[in-house]
Length: 271
Image 1 (cartoon, rainbow, N blue to C red):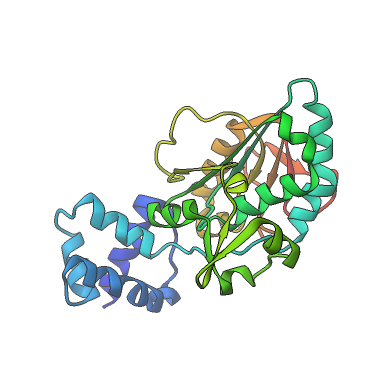
Image 2 (image 1 turned 30 degrees about the vertical axis):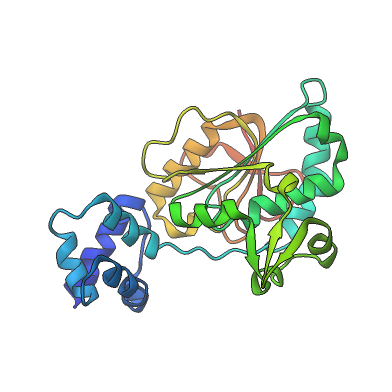
């Protein structure tokens, strides 16, 4: 059994850079059991043997997606969005006033709550952006969660996690037991598949704001440093990066510094 888990951990690490610890063996069994059934196999052990052969690209993707964490919620942790509204956006809007262009990237967006939170915040508090060219790109490793995100459809349980009541009333409509985000807000976000450790899609613009929150903790140090370096290359010289409050941008060749706002998880790019 230990060899089976070791094989799957190495498989996921090689293809997605994700590190699964030994104490997470229970997670492998629980999450891959449905994948085994989907492939037509009787157990995770049979799935592991299948992976040692020549599995199709679909099977490989299902395994990676099955072991990827997709925890998310609207306005998650609150503080980053308060900071975005009160400090970051006013500063950037002043700097970009002559070109009226703003580009935002929500990396590892899962089922879309983060980028849609950003879109609602812009709509609610910055009406002047209606005359700007605003881009909100949302990316994720998993095509299945991106398909879900594009729908903008959320259960009552998802709506109850972090979404202010007046946002629900203003920007969503009820359809059966679900809630659907209004088209004007939903259309502000575009979705695209991106695997951090593979070749990134091209072209990508330079982003003014990047949200890459609660993602870096799943990678080892060399992979994390590589990802941060690539993110920095896709940012404007004065861009702002948000990471999780327990995450850091500290690397051997760091090109970020703690933002002047002195808030955990917010960093400025260094030229």
